[in-house]
Image 1: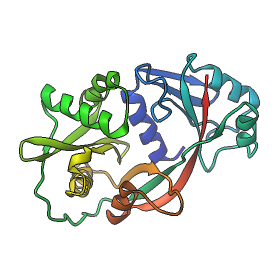
Image 2: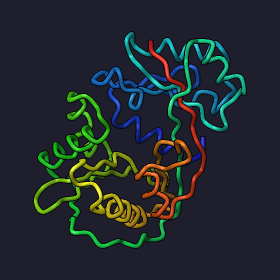
Image 3: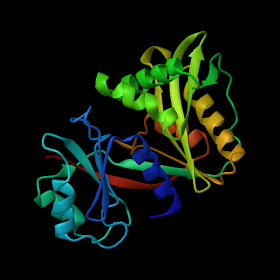
Image 4: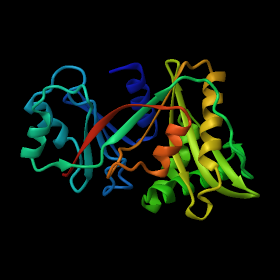
Length: 251
């Protein structure tokens, strides 16, 4: 794995209640959201040593019964037969994730009436968990898990419309690289410049912490059109680094 891939994986692990290492991969499982492949994933299969069919079977068996999950297949994963092996086991291509990287040069801040506040209290953490849960369409039971991000090594922010929390985002730093995640905006507050402001703030803070690299992810382009998140990331000076394929299945 590259440094950036290691940092992203460490960020995921820090907030995931169930972590298992098997078959050369890391299995992440959130019992509070058994139907969400966004949070139930196997990462790293074939990215170190070349995977075998035995590795694939071990990874699939590591998930609990009734869990819907993704098996992530990175661009450099080996062998080339991995997708075929997953397809033979009933998996189908899901929505891949584009990884983006950039340096830590500042982002121009666009005008916005929103203000930013770093999460520093239990009340802020609860608001953070609620916004991210709603933004990602996760079950109610995931809110306390997400709210613990600031106690698990993440720095978390809220964007406020007056006194009302409108948007959230976070950053995880390790090995001189910053992973940006948990970006979400409540539907009624979209279009107010929250994510531009949160991206600019986190990149500035990454530089202040001595990082030389920043990475983030969002869903790959569909029908050749990027999402709002995709556009915001590109506008902030990120470069497309590659798509990780996500193979969807259920235990």
